Image (cartoon, rainbow, N blue to C red):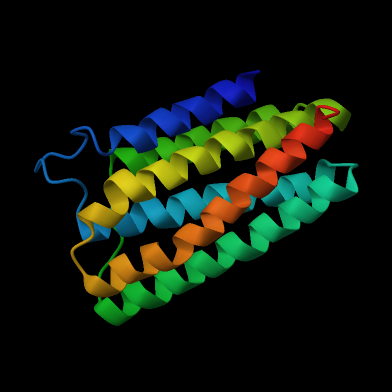
Length: 177
């Protein structure tokens, strides 16, 4: 249950990014978006690596491996872009909260095993990907000023939707549905 609360906290933080969380009132700047993207992806990579180690379910391990691979690739692309643009990701309240939420989620997951671990991990993945898609649609894509950054966000959006649908299907299977 704690993992689900952490996921909802992440969702609120990401959704809050569009509701005046940034001082200049126009949403996050491109350097702030870069930091949010990097942290959001790294949080999921870290959780995926833990799930690969701890889960005893083949489907969960495979999903976790996909999360690690895909989110690592997004971070690599984001890193290449910020280097090309000579922009350093700028930490902000949203990226800091995401990191704290990710750390809390990992701590909770580390204390679980078996079916409880799998359920908490997958429930978190569903909530987390819902929040990320909402943040992409309502805050990050509309706030991106650099055309290449905006294009990257638009390009990765379908993968996040696919992850969300995959996580939802896995969640149903784990619940016996």
